[in-house]
Amino acid sequence: MIKIAVLVSGNGSNLQALIDANLSGQIVGVISNKPEAYALERAKKANIATAVIEHKQYPNREAFDDVMHQQLLDWEVDLVILAGFMRILSEKFVKAWEGKMINIHPSLLPNYKGMHTHQRVLNTGDRLHGCTVHYVTAELDAGQALAQGVLQVGIHDDAVSLASRVHVLEHLIYPQVAEWICNGTVIYTDQGVLFKEQPLLEPIQFCKF
Ligand code: GRF
Image (cartoon, rainbow, N blue to C red):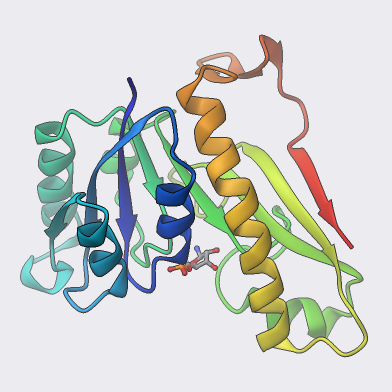
């Protein structure tokens, strides 16, 4: 059985969706860089081990990442799921977990990497928006996309309503992708990602209009 660690910094609604999905892998631990993250309460309620590793207590990014890396090794983790983890990871850490670490980003990548995606979508006047689950590479929000949730921007949408509509999609697609990895539907190889034993050329799309 695949052992999963989830890295969080905040509310942890995506962590909750992963817990509630009863994945065929096991969430063996949750790491937060913030002691006050509500995600830690969610983990404790689900009897999942937690570790608080505060980035402020380390002299640099590498030192912080080394401690996280060691915790993941101690838990014998096969898959790292970033779920609202608000730290940029060092190249060394990302390399060590290449093909074993996924993230969810609130935009249709490659559009709107980085922060404040909902407002930027509104500013541009895009009609479509959503979220993307992707493998993590050293370049921010740039690894291969596995799945996207797509929605239509309504005339009454603002950044707050978009954030909550995108969250609904996140809670749908993130557990699905995690399960695909757990059950071997998605396989990472050095030659590219396989989906049902075929090369995955485009992210799988989930639409909600
Ligand atoms: C989500 O919007 C996700 O896309 C982004 O951080 C947010 C985390 O929300 N990476 P939550 O903590 O899972 O509720």
